[in-house]
Length: 184
Image 1: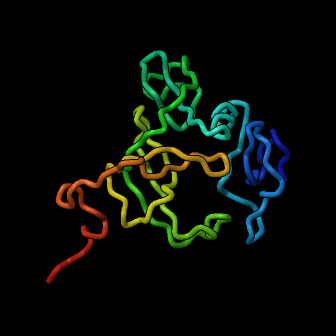
Image 2: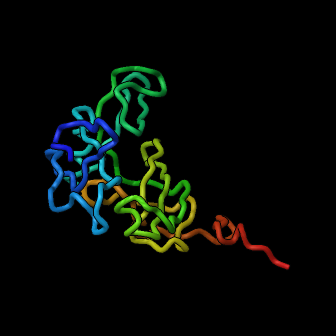
């Protein structure tokens, strides 16, 4: 088991709720099925500001002063211009759905206890794409371009439909189910 601040040496990951301090709450160390959890971060000195903000219900992204572009996943350099003049900046928490997949089976704890769930990629309002999960929405109600807002589960950013999101006419946005149907 990892102690707060230690790095995994053999694939072991911290488990439980990540607190603002980066500590993992002991009561959440194992899911009902037992074993290690694979949905929680390995917090280190570089990513600590991101996870501290997430524990407080705020989403941070990296922003480059050199080219004035944001990026995600967090890196110590800009992937666009290679500048090292990169800082944490608050994100609006707004996004649009780029793509998704409904996961019906996952043997890694605690994902197996949540199936089916929606694994997704969203376009943040600031520009970067982010892998996440969509919550509080039935999968047949999703559409590409759907407005989303960030929320947090155990200190991890996930997204839910934005209040007032209105689906465009069905002819404007094909759904995965209609695209795969055939008529005879």
